[in-house]
Length: 255
Image 1 (cartoon, one colour):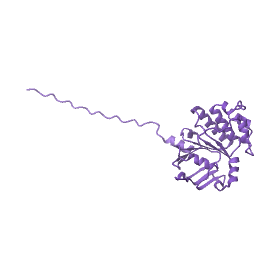
Image 2 (spheres, one colour):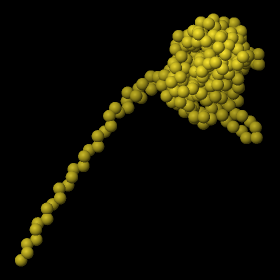
Image 3 (cartoon, rainbow, N blue to C red):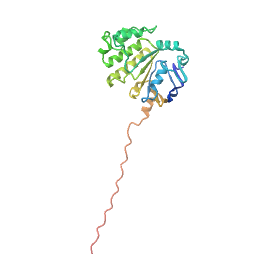
Image 4 (spheres, rainbow, N blue to C red):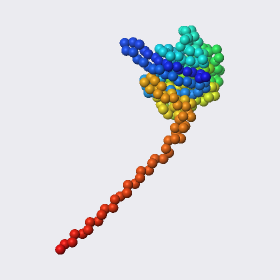
């Protein structure tokens, strides 16, 4: 049985104008998978992530996590779910400015009953020598690694990442993606990352493409390998057209 399942989930925002951000979405995610939700801006990716993280609720459908329908949770149950089961990594870090790197991690650990050792996690993300630095004394890539360490330190079952490389250069961004993937596999922590960058999707166990609030396609790593194998490796060489021989005109005899 799938660890996470969306069953015909829709989300409609009702105001002066009704907006259907997510429309009849269904997909499954297994425990320990590294999943990328891919789509353009406004496709509905963040709405899906927020509903899975318990920060928003669906208008229709069911969201099953570990055999429980989180849509049926009351206010207090949702708080417990977010506190113990979910880790968030945002695009813009959201670190507490007047706390050091270590203190930012320790603060998150206070919310969990099964937290990991902050110093161990900071070593895992390569920041063991930045324990006493404030966010303003760190580069963008280092701040994002602190944000990842903060989310991991809670020891959540699910790690949700909202465009975690959006504010970083390509080299630093790739380092962050590699870090998230390694953590997913080493700790068996189900990781779901949303992005509009198709290159990031190459590393994923599963890619769920969203367009106009709907699931456009679901492809596993195996599916993508098969697609690459059947692609033609060489272009067909166009056949050369045979040149027609021009008939030589007979010289006109002058009488």
